[in-house]
Image (cartoon, rainbow, N blue to C red; front, side, top):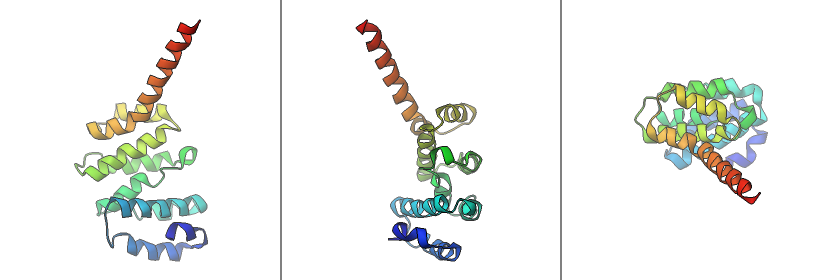
Length: 156
């Protein structure tokens, strides 16, 4: 319901929703809230900094998870500097749900900019889990490309 009506909301409404985010937390509720705040930013890009500052660097790791995954479906409109800042703030944590978010965010952005993701992974020490998640689509695409190229040369 929150996601469906986000287009009519204003900052005061979003501020109220922020109080609800930590009411009953688990990955599924946090990821649903991420969609609401992400959609709000998509509709009001001028509000990006205001929304994002509620999550990045937060004491609660669930809020930091939202910061990392906030732009999952932004693709070419991803604020890469923010994505990098959100990931680097939590790169060393052992928290599974943060590491999953890091891999997920990078994997999603790799659909838009695989070169940036590969460089990021090469230049930073990610957990094995986050790294595997981050590179999953890139490796699948390379394997598909190799198979397709091999079958094309054999057809000639």
